[in-house]
Length: 491
Image (cartoon, rainbow, N blue to C red; front, side, top):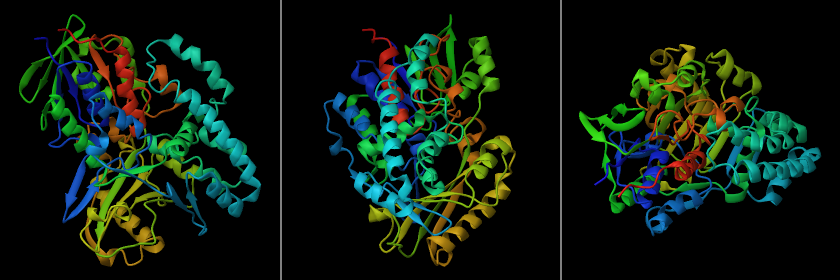
């Protein structure tokens, strides 16, 4: 019997890769360092409350459905997705509000009420986003960029679509009202990119949401993770949790085994659903790195960090939307603090997730479950989060109490938080970056870590660090890219 394909990591990328490998006939062994599956999509359970640790927004659900179809199954037998409306409610410091929805008539009516001069501009922006989607997503999301020639082939289309501009600059070309500019440019933050720097190819996110909607899984995102684990078990995939990979062994420039949990497991190939910087820098012996990899380890630029607070309340807030973006008084300047100056600002913008708005079972009766996320500098800032974290969480809770959640602190039933140190220590993300390397133009497509290692035979990557990048659709698409580059199984 041939050696198995080994998947390191059980985030969405690793789970999807394991399904696709097994469906192609490979024997598969999946290794996960944590004691539960999911990676960033793990789950916390405290005092009767259920908290998704990471991803809370599901888009392009067909990418999940097709994994089950590969095994002749129906995803509806494993988890249930329900639509979220509005996609996001955006609250501004001046008291105005905008519900970002999928229905164009409702969207245009809100633009008309907020800034009549921008109605036609939005129509043109949406048409432009659709064209970018048709190239950047439809044609390229599952295509490997292993050679510079593949990048050069699409460069004319990218230039024609204005992808040399940033997302914010492209939005500002069509939209005049600053509040609406923020509404239609914040989405790159969901994949770790600064809207003022990230290429406008990421406007495709806007059309992706318009095309397929925004969804939530009953039971939380963790229900999707456990549905995929159940599927893998039925497909005969061997899974080991609490088993961190310690070394990828190579011989003659090719992977031959993975050392994990005190065992040596021979491998026909290795698929790493892990930060490629960590894989190249710590799991491979120094002699397995070529000069390009060594240079990349020194020069890569990383996404921002994330501060995430989790809390449950003894009362409910029925006026809330499922997803709320609470904009702070500064936009560009705050992002400069986070990405460039790397200082912890006194103000913040927040993403508030209220999953019990859609699924009350995630909290005890009469209670509410919340998740609040604040982009912050990554660990290159040198912030002592042991000291800063509790005070920062207090400030966030105070702001939420002033704006969206009256009486919050006197009704807290449970609360805790994670900082960039969690991303570094538990999720093994370089500098505690929330989304791996930053998706700027010089770190996208060919310039990103390749899906197939160019110099270590049999080593492949899925997840946020490789093409096409972060976000649930991006990570699931990295496993589709894998199908184009992985070898056929050996009998």
